[in-house]
Length: 400
Image 1 (tube, rainbow, N blue to C red):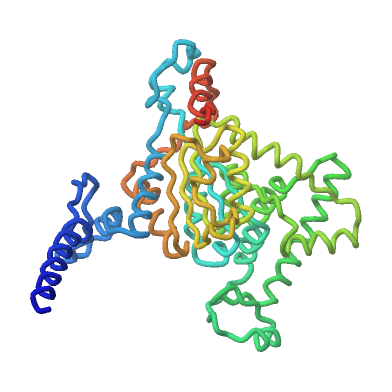
Image 2: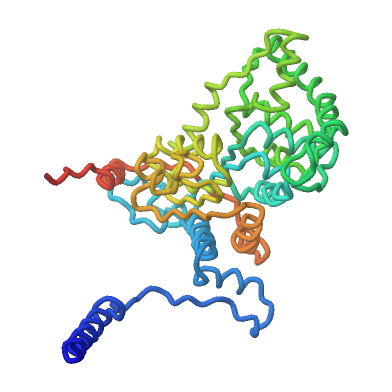
């Protein structure tokens, strides 16, 4: 028995040796991808170097590093990077004329970004004409205006709703917006709605949400405001759900005091789609999800997809929502081009967006490299270029 037992032990040992070599200690193929390396604080505190190290740090830091690289590609591209087709018009055969054709950058953001201190980051981008098209919700407009009239305060996520309600305080996460702020907004906006209504009746003005927001920016006349700088720099802010918030409440009240005021949303769907159709290249930066994400990406279907894309969101894709969808899902719809290199950062935007702007847009301005004058964003494809674009997305027959 001992002999047999010994034989069995020897066989088991040999089996274990072979199996561990084959399964546990299997040989690896050689990798050529970058090595994982984080920032070494022995080199001192260098915030620019720290942000640049994110791309090799791993996890969402790497996604953030890739997103900053994607924004740099948006900013760097010009038509001079593309070969001159034989059927190009004479104007755009000149290299200097081609250098002026740049990426049209879209910024979409949810209203909580304006409620938070990210408003100042967004205002910076608009003030310096760093984005060309904007999309937000009604809250993204009214909260910007309200902050010019009265402040939003820090609170706490755990403050009890019943107590806040009795005190006339509205909680936005860990922020507090007093009811009095919205009363001030009503006092400010109602006379403007009356003036707009007068212009509709007397001058035949056909108002739409973008025109109304443009007017708000003019009337608020406050350099801390996003809407003010969009007005000054003639940057359209699209808000297809403009009635979903305090602005909607004011329009509701106005409709009873003075029926007949009209906002034409068809003007704006034509406007936002034309912004995509006419652009030579588009780059999208989408902060959050829901309406602001879909409206931006749906417009870019009209041009066979955005060329550059950065998403920042905490939403996940397992529920099938567009808010949580990864960029690759957008590729399947034609919202992002098949040869693009889009990036999604799974992160809360107040942590991420200011840092991304610091390392890209703001750094260029600080270093004297921001030269927005003379840029061209709308340039059609020639017939030969258009045919090549179509070939990129030609449907391939399925293998049987």
